[in-house]
Every structure is written in C-alpha cells, then in structure tokens.
Length: 113
Length: 109
Image (cartoon, rainbow over all chains, first blue to last red; front, side, top):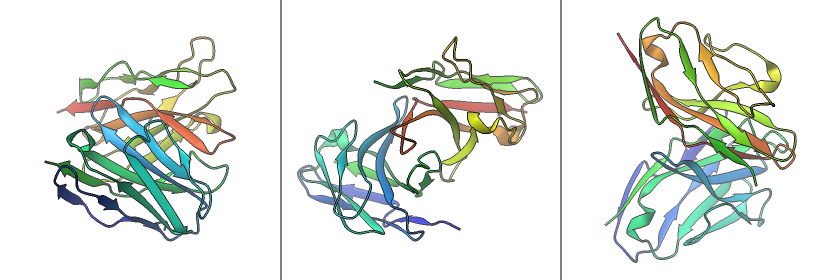
C-alpha cells in the first residue's frame, strides 16, 4: 500500500517566518508534487519533481521553493510566510507516465498569522 | 494552455435522486480526463478514468469531445456519496494533472 506521509497535519506560523513542509513516500516513485487546495480554486500545482535534485515550477510557484535531495523526500519551503499562503498543502507522488494515479498525502493545514 | 472548469461549487440532492457533476475542459491535445474524490477526513483519491470506461461505486463519466465535457453521473445518489469531487485533465505525456475547482456533493436523507 502506497504511503505518502506529510510531517504535520496542522501548522501555525507567523508572517515572515521560514516554513518547511516535509513529504516522504515509500513506493520509490520518481514523480512528486506539491499542490495547495483552496475552496473554489481546487488544487493548484506549486512545484513538481521528476527526479532527485530536479524541480520544475508549477502554476503558482511565487513565494515557494522546493528541495529534493533524496528520491523519497520532497520538501516545500516558504521563504517568508505571508497570510495569503494560509492554505491546505497536499503532497503527491506517482510513477512516470502515470500522472493520473496520484497518491496523495493527508495534507498539512497551514495557518499564517 | 489546459483548463478544467467545474461550474458548480455545491450540489445538493436527496438520497435516491440522480446526480450529475459537470466538468468542462479546454486543451489543444488529446485529452485524458479523470475524476478524483475526497471523502470527509480522507485523502484525495482517483475515482475513475475516461479511458477505462468503468463504473465505480455506481458512477460513470463519458468523454464528449464535441462539447469538451466529462460529466460525472450516478442514477441514484447515496448518502455515502457526499464528498468533494474534482475533475482533472492529464497532459505532458501523462505525467501531469490540472484540476478543476471542485464540486461539493451533499446527499440529504
């Protein structure tokens, strides 16, 4: 059973703080993704990675960066958190060419005060 | 650029009534469409794919290229169908998905 684990279920941070969201998958998937989920806006892709040390910008990368030093781990970084980054963040992984078979983590609800 | 539109944010029906969740897309290539579902306190998961033409939990969806639609249908809604539903379009050689804004389905007893 594929597991995508996000380190925190709820996180509260202050404006200007540097925030790290961690995601680990145990199925040796090459592809990993970070989405944010907002009511009415659905899921929007922030960044994705097809391989170790590789990253590509998604639709809304501004204010975010990522790190993929190991195949199983994909970290999302908010360099200087702002209130408009309050959201549910979802990590997902998949095999190459099987992007529809996304396996999602349970999400991190981030509140920036 | 690809785009997925779900015009209804909320759909409320009574148990036993038919359900249709609308999805429209725009894409210049050959589309691959999917429906994802998120039940309360559960992870987002794949419900069905247009290419497999399957029925999952009584739901079906037909790709209509002429109308660029992929509506999700079920003849008789059940309370356990209450969830958030997302339509998604695959692109980039099957490696990427673009999601619609989602529709919350509420099935009342």
